[in-house]
Length: 74
Figure 1 (cartoon, rainbow, N blue to C red):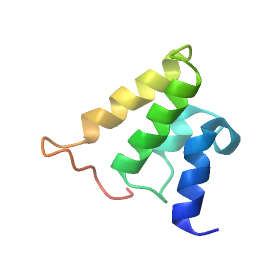
Figure 2 (cartoon, helix red, strand yellow):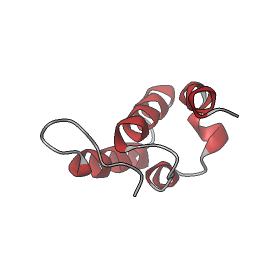
Figure 3 (cartoon, rainbow, N blue to C red):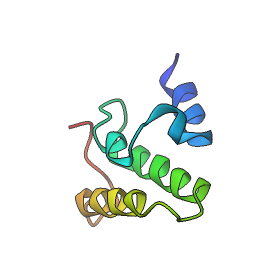
Figure 4 (tube, rainbow, N blue to C red):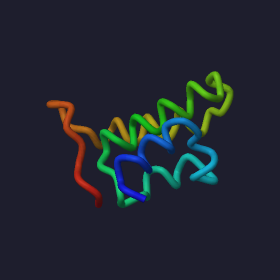
């Protein structure tokens, strides 16, 4: 599956691809900006009812520099 198609599929249903929000942070296929999109999509899907998603997103945002550009896959 091409990365772009995979990314789009993940955005539609993140829990289908990840067991836990922390798994998104460890996914080396995506950069931090893409990981953030995935976590925000997941948070919206869950209507904010999963605090661990918000925690993972806050951790990720702490890694994103002041210019808004995240690190490449670590």
